[in-house]
Length: 515
Ligand code: ADP
Ligand code: MN
Image (cartoon, rainbow, N blue to C red; front, side):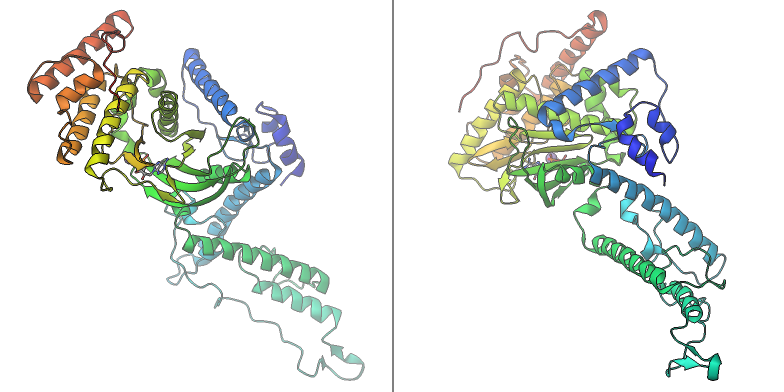
C-alpha cells in the first residue's frame, strides 16, 4: 500500500487528482449516458439534498469522493474512518487472495479444506452468497510438512566440541521458521517454509504476536457473525453509514432491530450529542434502512414513477438511486407533516438510503400500532377525530395523500395517533392520487366502524370530507369511476397545458374538522 497516495487522497478532493494517486487505480464509475440537462437536474437535486443535510447536521455530511469504496461518496473527514475504510478494502482484497489459495490447495480433491474461518469479510457482509462455504476445521492440516527434529529433553545434542544446545542460533532459527507454519493460514509468511531459513527469536516473537492479534481479530468477527442479529439485516455499506453516525457522535448506540419489513428494516438507537446548537437530537431515534435489494420495490414503481416531483429523475436512475429516493421522499413528506403540526416522527438526518428520525415510543419499546392496541371507546372516538383532522391537514396543508394509511401505519403514543411510513405518500394530483386517497379512506372507515365508532363516516363521505371534492355517487363503483375520471381530466390537462389543475388545492377548501 502506498502511504503517500493514501494520505493524499482526502485532501486532493473530488477532482481527478486523487485518481492518479489512488493505490487501486481509478474507481469503476459506471455512469449511464444521459444529456447535459439530465446531469444538471440530478446534480441540482443532489445539491439541494446536501444543503438540507448540511443544515440539519453539518459535521457528518462532509462528502468527498474517495477511492476506497468504488463509485460511492464517502466521508473522509475522519482519520479513523479512513483507516477503517482502508481496512475494509484490504480485507476484501485479502479474502480474494485467500479464496484463490483455497482453490489451489483443494484442486480436484474430494476432501477439501476451507479457509472460511480466516476470512476477514464474512458472507453476511457481502452481497453475494456464492462465497459461502461450509465451515471445516483447518487447524489439523494432514498435508502439513513434518516438523524438523527437536532438541531432546536434556537440552543438547552431539558430543564434545560438536555439542549444540537448544539455544544454538542456527537450530533456533530453523525451528522458528518451521514454527511459522503454526500460524493461521491467513497469516502471510512468504514461501520461506521449506527453505533453510533461520529466523531470529526477536523476529519470530514479533511475528507471533502479530499472528495472534490477527487471529483474535478474526475470532471477533466470527463471534459477531454468530451473535449479531441486528447487523445481519444490513449490508456492509449500510453498516458503514450507521457506524459513521455513531462515530460522529450523532447516535450513542444502536440497540437493535424494531421491525424487518419487506422494504425496510427499522432500528432503535439512543441519540448522541449534537455538536450544533440549533439541532437537538432526540434521546431515542428510529433508523429506517431502506432495503437495497430491489425485488420488493419493483411493485412500488407506480407511486414514484408518476410523481412529477420525482418523474424526471426516475427514468434515468439506477436501482440504488431509486431506493435512495424512497428515503428522500419519506424525509420530505415527514418534514411537510412536521411543519403542519401533524404528529409524526421528526427527521434527524438522511444519509443515502438510511433515514434517522425521532423514535415514537419509550425506553426502546416502540409505540403500539393502532391495530395492536385496545382503546377505550372514548379513546377510539378521540383517535378517529384526530385521524380525520390529520387526513385533512395532510391533504390541504401538506398537499399529500398518505397512500398506505391503515391501522398498521398509525401508532398510539402519548394519548394520540402518530402517522408513520410516508415514503410512498404522493401529492393529490398524482395520476393515482385520488385512488390512493380513496383506499386510505376505506381502511380508516372500516377500522373505526368495526371498532364501534358510531360517528365514523363511510369511505365516500370521508373521501369528500378530506378532499373537499363533492362526488355524489352513492355506491362504490360509481364513486370510483368518478375518481378515475377526475384523475384522467387532470392528466389530460397536464398533457395539454403542462401543469396541474388547481382544482385539487384551491377549489373549495375542505372544512377542517377539529377534535
Ligand atoms: P415498513 O415500510 O416496513 O412498513 P414502517 O415505516 O412502517 O416501514 O416501519 C416499520 C415498523 O417500524 C412500524 O410499524 C413501527 O412499528 C416501527 N417504526 C417505524 N418508525 C418508527 C418510529 N419513528 N418510532 C417507533 N417505531 C417506528
Ligand atoms: Mn409500515
